[in-house]
Length: 305
Image 1: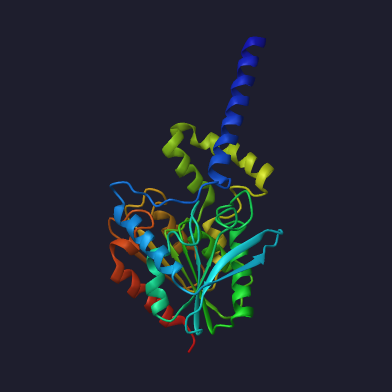
Image 2: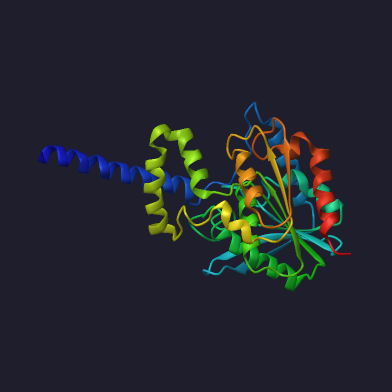
């Protein structure tokens, strides 16, 4: 009996330590910067990101920073447009401000938009050791919106995000925001943190995913101060800002049903557009003209002139 209990204890400790390693790999800052995938499946994605980064580096942008609610220094790039409408664009998981949005930047700037491109906490040049999948990032979005409103005073601000950044801006709809924030554009966001984490783990750990979600949740509370029950789609019933949801139907990373859940519960006006056969964060690359048209129509509909 003692041997049996000893074995159970050892297995439990090993599982808990393994969950800690999984949490650290998934939620801790990565030391190396994001590198566009050069796999055979996504060469165009890599090419467009490289082109966008190069274009942005040739512009006269400025660097800026704010202090988060928990004392972190958060940094961003700001590129001035015509000053009427500004886009606050949040990148995705383990990326940086010039990753997912890089292919769009030249087009958006040519439309006259001011562009604010923050590095999310624990990414790029911003401080922080742990990301929180939108839990704390949504508060950072609200702080950046207040900074943008107070410093550059655009007539309109739209929040945009891709992947985890889409979740950050969608959850920001529940935060106090300046009156100049008119709407939100979220590309392949998730609305249920626990389900998304379980989905990601299932691809790696199979049947053990529910157990590891539970154990990783203990680590998230201990090390990072958040938990997997921090938000659910039903929380968005209180949202009032217009929302444009964009999602590829062949997204293996964040299933398109995630944005369906958001649309079901979201309290404001919602328009959800699917891109057939598109992989994760790939809609702009595959259907550029349609994507651009949807974004411009949404902004034109809700901006104040």
